[in-house]
Amino acid sequence: MQLSTIEPQIIWKNFSRLNAVPRPSKKEEKVITFIKEFGENLGLQTTVDEVGNVIIKKPATAGMENRKSIVLQSHLDMVCQKNSDVNFDFETEGIRMEIDGDWVKAKGTTLGADNGLGVATIMSILESSDIPHPALEALFTIDEETGMTGALGLQPGQLTGDILLNLDTEEDDEIDIGCAGGIDVTISQNYKTEEAKGQIVRLEVKGLQGGHSGMDIHKGFGNANIILGRLLYKGLEKENIQLVSINGGGLRNAIPREATAIVSVRNAEEFINTLTSGLKKEILEEFATVEPHLYITIENSTSSEKAISEENSKKVILTLKSLHNGVYRMSPDVKDLVESSNNVARVELKEGSLKILNLSRSSVDSSKDSVAEQLKSVAELAGMNVEFSGSYPGWKPKPGSEIVQLMEKIYTEKFNEKPHVVACHAGLECGIIGSNYPAMEMVSFGPTIRGAHSPDEKANIPSAQKFWSFLKDILANIPQK
Image: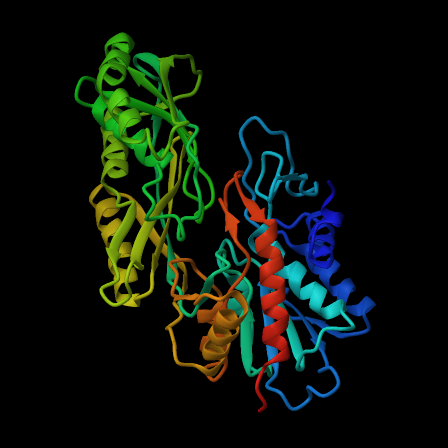
């Protein structure tokens, strides 16, 4: 079965067209050109702003001119993650897709349904000739996944819409009315290197499922960097360790799936036995239910690279063991909502240069600051440098807004059940856009997607049909100005 044969065909057609275009975060030149040409070929007013956001405007259909105007918004970039045994270049290749039952998946890479299905849906509305809708502004932002610089660069006055519909939520029975803000916390230090004094051992953690560092942070998934840190810390009980290198995790917004360390120890046999006879078994038992494919290897190895000193290695290991990872605080106001969290996303030690990348999230700014300051305190105690960057605000819920009430009514009548009106722990662009457009009502919703930000990402086909029908009914029933 081909994607072009499944319903709604118009969305899957446009999703396939989009997924043929490389679109990594911060490297969106090709997809910006693609969307710009798409709008121009439809004869619609199309502009690209200073940072690369694309805005396409479409007049209201006949009889809808006096309705409130709508901004349809999705981001162009995608998270680029692949399995280690997959040969794929996200900068030059299109995503290889396949159908598996009721799901669309990619072959060993992220699918790009986050937020490509939203983009494809907006494309489908723009090119339609038989879907009633008010005046539309389609806003395609860049770089949502690694800094939200597109939303941050959007200037006041570029949009005139009354209501913004963000199509970047991943459960089709949810209407999202709030989200977390975030801040990047980068820990770094440069160390002198020296010849390794002992025997070389390689530690590897792999097989974790990873996932979205906001939406999945409360699910108890394993973080490869944290597990690696536990192993190294345990090794300190028996050995002085020299770190040669660490390579763990990847993007800030993805829970790390794999991590590797090369170390030098005085007695490799005793070091390996200490870990394999105790902690390794305990970790595998801890994660047996949620991470059945977790795989840990600790074995003799070789390396020609130099190491950092035992003293500095201990500082790095103790820091990695001490950094908070996971849920920091649950919301006291919204049931089951993670208020604040941190993801120890990337740990790299190479030729004496250390970097630890974190993404701290919170729906409350003071709590976000508290998480970041805790990380900073730990790192500075170890003599490391800390930089805060990329801070963006959360989105405060307004459950009584007119658009929320309308969507609840339509959903309930259409699907014979009430939707879940929620706030999420992901970083949606609504909070940033709302800071420049405070009068604009905002809602986020979308089709069901699983495993976002990981090679297990998949999009549900029946859910896309449900979402498309829901969106068309919303546009047809937007109230008058």
